[in-house]
Image 1 (cartoon, one colour):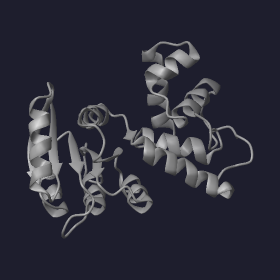
Image 2 (cartoon, helix red, strand yellow):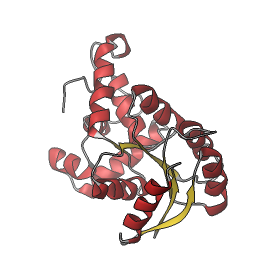
Image 3 (cartoon, helix red, strand yellow):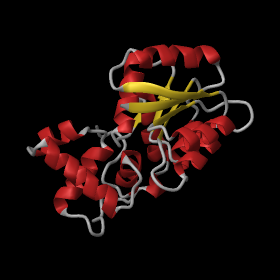
Image 4 (cartoon, one colour):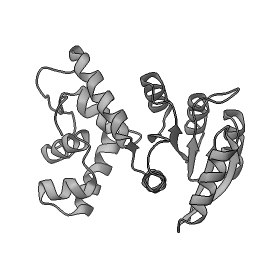
Length: 220
């Protein structure tokens, strides 16, 4: 059972998510927080698997709360940011703070529930509209991307292929189809990349793929 901590200063939002989660097999609400300070306290006390985090809240905002939660010792919960505001500064701030996902509230509710499951499983997920803007930012900063792809130290040729496909946004299943390998093998490659590159999650692998020039804006 995946235990979820809901953090939002709007009671109606928390209530709506609670009702949806209650009807989803394998998910349960561990608790609710109305601001960042409360989220940090409850995350430590309740040890949820996933924290669904709003950004703009009174007192401590969601970005600072995310930073504190993900920096906790041991195995901290994953954080999935769910907000009305998908401003670039919020996106970058949340990902730098350690969030494993970034969604906007106008997405289909079933997609939000699926995202909770994806993040709980150790993967990462970013709303497509946000991904497009992140790619556009790389396009606007050509100096940050090498002119040609360069080898990644300690990464095999096959792992570099997998990293490139992760950077293009492919899932493990899609990677297995692209490279004609099993899904389990694709997942194993991703796991080794996370370890070798000391990456927290799939989001950081995507960023690495762009920074090393393995993927360029416009690919997909």
